[in-house]
Image (cartoon, rainbow, N blue to C red; front, side, top):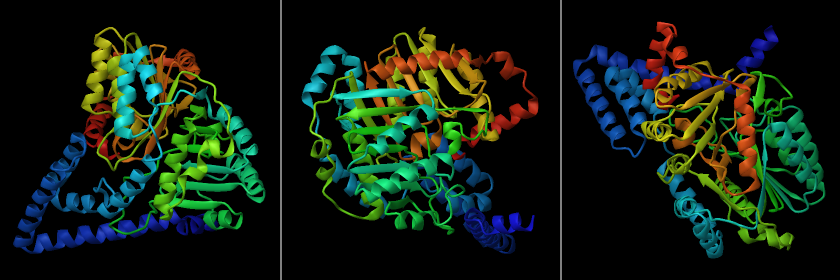
Length: 512
């Protein structure tokens, strides 16, 4: 028992949390004490609260995000100001944004547009070509034809091919993950990576510091360095009031030799491959890309790597043809993309909205969280009202209780318009997929919640007429068959206290 308490007290998360709580408590008490003692201080705090609200309102952030902070600051000025000072900043610093933007401009110069592929898509389907042009012009990632894709309906299925790809590596392995936790999955990968380093393969690993704050093994970076694996942490979490918690690297990318790439919902932890049970069966999804389109995933990694390490290198040394000059088979059209909170362009959300708005027959959606703004609600409602078969699958067993209640608070509003909502009964669904009309799909890391849509670095793969599209549809139908369809009675007959709590949670949804 004493060992467990000591372990908890010396845990990094506990130390950081305690430091922030103490600083926040000091700031709150100082403001409260002065406002109670001196009338002019109370007036000053109210004026400061009004100023903070003006700053919030004039931000280019989501209106719901601004509304939540406005209510908190005006209702409880002292607490609201203290909270906003610690947690309210929704963007990285100006200096950081400028540095990342410079790296981004450099890397996009190595992403040429293929006019032949674009013309072929325009001739085949002008509507889908509009979506592709949006990704090309606003996310700066081109369309590819000479690429193949494979969809994975579970983490364990994808992990087997990830292991195989790493074992075949000859030149480089790039990994970028939100969560890394010790276990069978990590140790299996490290065994291969350490062996590949000895063979002369370049191995680089990026992890998000907050995502790994509870899970990363002790002295992980030091061990990686000793093993010859280059390691970098995104946006290190430090226990000071100016810390920025909101912008995280939520991407999951594995690239091997520039020839094969993997992305999707799967992190490096045993629950993602069902070697450890946390919330029943863990239903996830991922995608493998082979061929020219892997270059976009490679550049996403290199951009983040060069920002964190503040390095500059010859990107062309990692071009696929540098190592393997061969023809790639065609499998429809493939367009990997990344979403960043730096450009004020909500690429992940707009891709989802475009798919919903262009649907002719159906849209099937996987998401672990359903915390959406008015634009997404209206798009889903309008599609259903027009006779489109709109189905959304969420978990039956949640990973976060309050977030789950918040997710369920949107059910009635959507179901009244004809949207069908299912809860995955075997356990927790962590997949993030859209599939539409047997011709377009996207698989990636973008959840239907405010943090994924507005604050995190995310990625995905947009597909048209690829074999993976029908694989996603088949998996969606099989998953829906294992799920329970929700009803309006379920929403309307809930305990009045739960409904009241859901109403409060809706107000603060953008902050959760």
